[in-house]
Length: 402
Ligand code: EZ4
Ligand code: CO
Image 1 (cartoon, protein in one colour):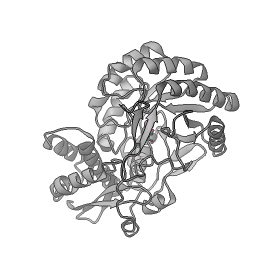
Image 2 (image 1 turned 90 degrees about the vertical axis):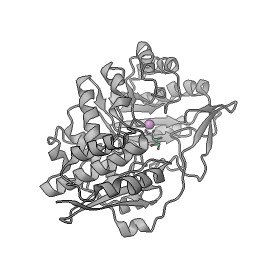
Image 3 (image 1 turned 180 degrees about the vertical axis):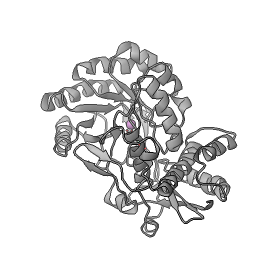
Image 4 (image 1 turned 120 degrees about the horizontal axis):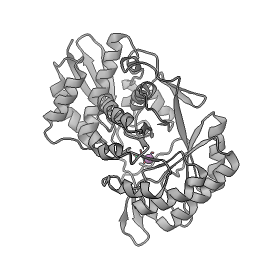
């Protein structure tokens, strides 16, 4: 069997998605997510112009060899664009391998290690009472874990607080919108939020929070120690993670569990974090960290060092990525939790899928392969729309991390 076609599909059913579709000489098809929020067309071109021509004629069964061919063959390694493109090829080839074997992909990864994939939803609100109402909604839906984000008094927009409750979407304008930031105000409001959530819902619910890279290590250490009495499940992305050493300082000052990795592209972004046990959860994802093949390598390293998984699952990762993530989540020994932001109905229609939510868990599809498809006719009705993520400035106008 040989690869006879590889094409890139760009569609925007509410937001932009890039999908790679590979076809074999036996007529088997596989798909992979290639969406890089705010830089979508760079990956589309990387695939169309530089990768698809190399795939034609290759044996689709050789997943590892193809991964190494694209990784080593680029010479300039890593980076979000390259690794997202490689991820798309890798994911599509696992989909094909599953279909050829007649097995869901998780069976090829060693089979089930658990009955379902525990997920957390996003409870957002401008005010703390609004957030509490949202938490109640998730609890009613059966969720065991909820991420809480609220507005910061005095700031006009805050990360994590959007117009739509179930579909938070930060990329929405043809130029980056500008938010303002005050660490001092933020550090005052978060303990109040956690206190209110514990007061109303008690301690059985897992409560998570995303700092979105905005603090310094010592500030994160201070926030973590303040929140310890409220037993956070994790604090996510406390600081920008280019400097892995920085996490040592956080560890010295708090026992709050730390999660990081949604913007990581390879094992080299987290090797020290994992080896030195500076984090508790690794949040790298299939689409941005080199596909199922490479993410499994990261998860295996993590398993050796008491680090569990907590993959990114925002709306800008397509149902193809979510589907692939669930096959890994159900199989790996060190699964922790999976982020689950629901896609819009339009997105779900373009990407029909067999995974489903029930009672706090997501369940991967039992169909051969990944169990997700793309309706190309419908996809063609939603052309690409330029969209940028916001930028963030301090009150005096200095650029800050978004
Ligand atoms: O801001 O995926 O944990 N989830 C997140 C997301 C990210 C977006 C960026 O594209 O931090 O909401
Ligand atoms: Co995040």
